Each structure stands twice: as structure tokens, then as C-alpha cells.
Length: 267
Ligand code: 6PG
Image (cartoon, rainbow, N blue to C red):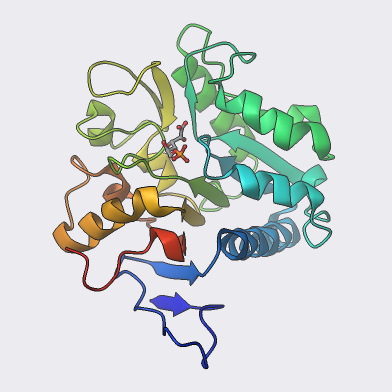
């Protein structure tokens, strides 16, 4: 399904090109601000619906620079301040193997932008213990313990926010990562020549694809060629890990600003 909302008004001299033909729902907005608004609105609605249905909301957030304006917006925009943080469990999609006070730590960024400014109870904040031995197993256990309270079938993430690198990696699943082949584990370590240093710990495709809603936020001209490549070549997940994101019983939604969308003429 393709959804083009909030785009160029009808009397605009340059009508918008068709949104890129990606799998799932593709939400395109003209500006960065508008696309942040779209994802924030959907996150808010999903949170409220899950709290109504299950009593809590399990949210997994990514690192990187792209989602930072969204995280800020959730804190300062009065439209989103009422997000039910007290009922939210906050998970981290992937982490770099560095201490939490290192500027490369995803949790450091998410703690500074969200945790410290929301009413989320500390026991509902779940950083990946990347510096401990076997962090993947520890995190997997923590996920199972917390989601295990839910009825079977509902024991999954309610909202997973992903980004995408120019090499089409997502989470810390890089092209040709052995972790891409795993069909059972929820979290895995990822290191070695195919990983952009530092070493990583990451949710697997198996975990991500079980989510109720997966949102892929891609903004700015730096990702335009990558989006064009996905549409043109439809590469397999081993070459472009983002292509392995296909929620099984859930929904996939891309959120793109106009700058990240290739022109129809783009090779
Ligand atoms: C990370 C991420 C990673 C990120 C992409 C895009 O820890 O780096 O979770 O998958 O989303 O690398 O990063 P940017 O948003 O910085 O382009």
C-alpha cells in the first residue's frame, strides 16, 4: 500500500513524484518536520491503543542521527507529551560495545533525549548491557521475562523504530552479517569485517519481524541513492539487510521525507 499524505498542495507548480515502490506502507512528507510529525503521531496512537489493549506498551528504539529530532519532538511537542510513558517499556534495537557514557552509545543518546525527560519508571528502561559477558543472552532473557507476562501471540514488540544506513544496513545487521541467517535468536552479537566498528549487539530479523508495527525512518538526500537501489534492484537481505524486514503478523511502514525520495528519472 502506498500512502502519500501532506505532500505538495494541489495548486503547487511541481506535483510530487510517485512515492518509491517499497513493500509496506510508504508515508512521504515534504519536510523533515512533517515526516517526524507523521511518525510521532503513529507512535502515539499505537502506544495508546496497546495500553488500552494490554495495559502496557513495548517500544524499541534505534540509535543513529536520524531519529534524534523525533526523540526531541516527543519531549517538547504538547501533542505528544501525553504518550503513556508510565506504561511503556523502552528497549534498544541495537547497541555498540562501549560504556554507557561513551558518545557512541545508543543508550546514552536515548537516555539524554528521552529517559531523563519522560515519566518512564527506571525498571521499564531496558538498555543492552553491551559491556557485560554474553550481553545478547542477558538481553534475550530480559525480553522473554518482560514480554512473557503477555498472552501468547501478544508477546512481541508493539513498535520497533528502525533507521537505515547508506549500505542498506538496519539495526546492527550489516550486509553479509552471519546474524542475518539466524532464525531463532532474538538478540545476537555482531562483530568482524562486515561490521562498522565498534562491535555491536543487535536484535535479529526474527525479533524485529515479530513486531506489531515496524517503522523505518529514512530522511535526507544522503539516503536517496539507497532507496533508489532498493526499488530498482530489490536486493536480497544478505546484501541489503533492510530488505529482510518483513513483519510476519504486523505492519511495515516507511517514513520518508521528500529529500530521501529518488526522482522517477533517477537511475
Ligand atoms: C545504529 C543504528 C543503525 C542506524 C543506521 C542509520 O546504532 O547506528 O541503530 O542501524 O539506524 O546506521 O544511522 P543514521 O541515522 O545515523 O544515518
